[in-house]
Image 1 (cartoon, rainbow, N blue to C red):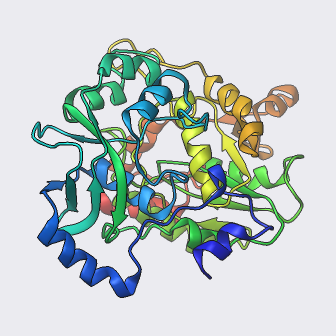
Image 2: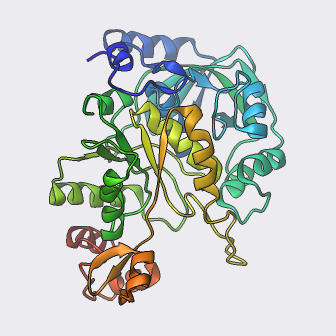
Image 3: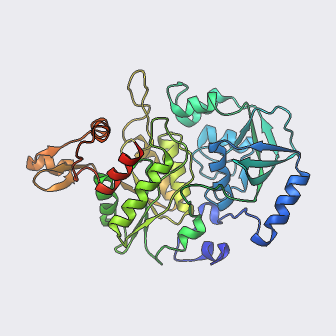
Length: 393
């Protein structure tokens, strides 16, 4: 199935901006393109892990309709108001960063990553961003306690580059990341596709949450759910992407549910709350999803000094819902599920109304029990997931 045919299928949601981008050199031209790039580019720049995720999503169309890194005008517009200069919704700016002051507009750069030649970037815009303004606009704070503020202040280079990309290869990863074309080819005709985003191993409550989303009143009868975890860089204390991938693979084999599709997303988390929720919806629309599950405090984070949340518990839900109509998507609010001794998983409201006995296990307790070799209750975690986590500890 070709990219054009997939994008044009009337039984799938249209990509963001109307066209699904493919920036990869055709296979029969790839070897010559790599040789030409090595011989003719002005310089070679090595991608960070985050850069490599952005390059991959640009090449395969995950950031459609972008055909490269944003120019300064679009960067400024997205920072200020989550829209490009053309008025297109975008949650966060997509830029390439460098500390190399000699990079100039008009140069062609070979972008490499861990021994691979990924892409050629033609520099069409170069500027020194005001990172304080970026932090406040995108993350709502300038505190270095916010992981993305700390990232742009201490990890990202001094200069940002914008310009068109020519894809040469996708990063080799432990977790194979299906492209939007590949994911779309697996989706049922004329049915809703509900996206579930996560960045941690899936436990019983998560599974109950995204399978019950298929029963939501605004979801079609034969809909499927796309479990689409982010496997790129995330918070410092999160479980490594390779380990998370192993838990997903084991769980997919164990549950073998025909209404679940599994794929992996090479995306670097920003923990940007409302802005991140919008960004995730746009990406999932490009992968063919019509609905998006928005959890309480989605992509939120806390200050390690005060313990206070940077965003309100429903701020991401409200913001995403407000943009959903323009995107042509619908949101599915995340159910507040609890485990009860009498009825298993039910909503917290149901448990309270019936006076049911709720059982709880915090993430901290779970990690302590893992380290101590204690038995993990099956109502909390799948045995297959626990086995992977124990083996990686």
